[in-house]
Image (cartoon, rainbow, N blue to C red):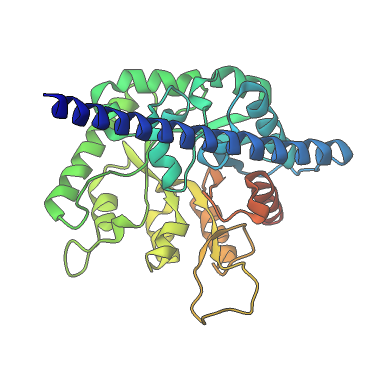
Length: 340
């Protein structure tokens, strides 16, 4: 019995030590995020005091995806300063994610963190007030299909509370995009969800990544099926050209195929910005500031204009210049200002 008690105590002690280590790791990550946030914000507050960035009135709305600034949104004042800096840089909009404007579990936060998309603690903040004080408009609200299917009215009301009539599906998780039956069923679900939202005065848009390039037949991809089997009255698109380029697709052909159904555009550039000499001739490419990569953005801009795109949204998760998301979206705005 004494031996069992000793073993039990050792197990409990080990578990407590592991839990303590996890807490210390989490606190360390949090402290580092706060330090980096203060450092970045201090730099931009000084810069903005010295010289404001002049902006032109663009023919389309320009915005930043909320995920890009997630690591900086740890309290109200810091978040408002980030949004004001975004407005000062020339952007007039932001795209929100529902899991970032409401309280989110620690598990989701850690998953986002380790996948390169830290979301900070913005879910505890009053985003309606933040948007109002910043002067930015909300371009759209990202959510997931199951939330719409569960309560289209609730999703619609949340979008309307931010003054937007656009809700975006960000793609499906744990989903087989190589199975034509699954993809055709997805198109039906999108049509039903879009119809339900349309009755609430909300447009449904589908946002691609690269998984939609999976072949479902000899001649068609999942994205072809989604485009062809969704009803334009109920389902349209937020096109992400970066992920399609990453998947090796003919991006210009896809944008031309979407035509007026391309309502919003997620724009990134793609390249390697590290200086040489290089250990290997094969470099790792990643998203980068607009105009610094190798994508033919000028041609894509012309197609987007012909399609009548309503808003252009910058989004990168990492690989920022100077490891600074604010400097990254400021640099990218120069391209937008010169090309729209």
